[in-house]
Image 1 (cartoon, one colour):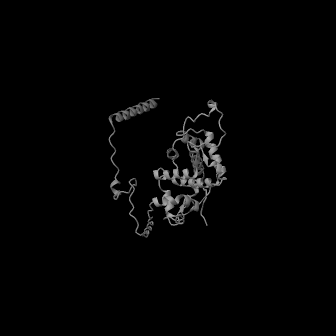
Image 2 (tube, rainbow, N blue to C red):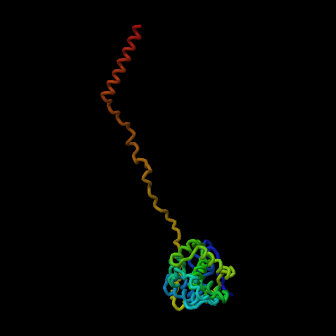
Image 3 (cartoon, rainbow, N blue to C red):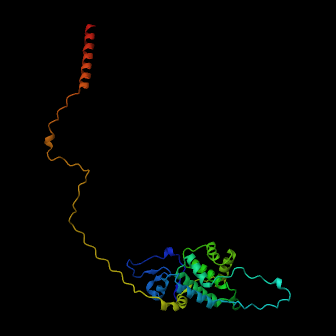
Length: 289
């Protein structure tokens, strides 16, 4: 039974039943890592900016989407002699090479390798469903198909992806495309795919198998088991006295004798003598009366 990659937001993907990696779930599929081919997991960990990987993307696009050669032209009625002034003008800006366009869009959008592998699955599905008369397009058809499928893959397989205006900005820097062109390419690709962007394990292996010979699998080492905890000891810990705690003096009788009162100052003595003279004068006046 093929394994289906569900489109679940990554915010609910990081559930790990075990602490030490046993039965750990892969965020892209919500399945344990042991159920996936190690070569596929190793391939998903390579950089999307790898020249070899980008060359493989170019080859798949050239194999799936055909374009008209420079000398070819669609079947049209013969032109009327003498009407050369009514010929269609040549485009002022030719499309860049497919390799440079792919490298530029990947660098600007920072797409990861799993997203690009999902785009290849959608490309293969689109090739089988594309009408026969539409398989030979203009030289920029491959560029448009790559951009449209990459937008769909980024939206389907990630929690967040750039908005349409940012995709338009990435493509416009290297190839003249309007916002309506980018939106129309995405809408037409989605209609040809019949709004089905789910991916099965068999489809993913079909597009990734040619790259298995170029990846190196590093065997994963099992996590060491945690050391057993030490048993709690019954010996009480030494309590450090607080620096603000006041302790009683060991010999309190030393402070039993009151301290002598210091002699009054000269100013205090004059004030006392003045008050005494005032009291004597008041007493004499009261007795004479």
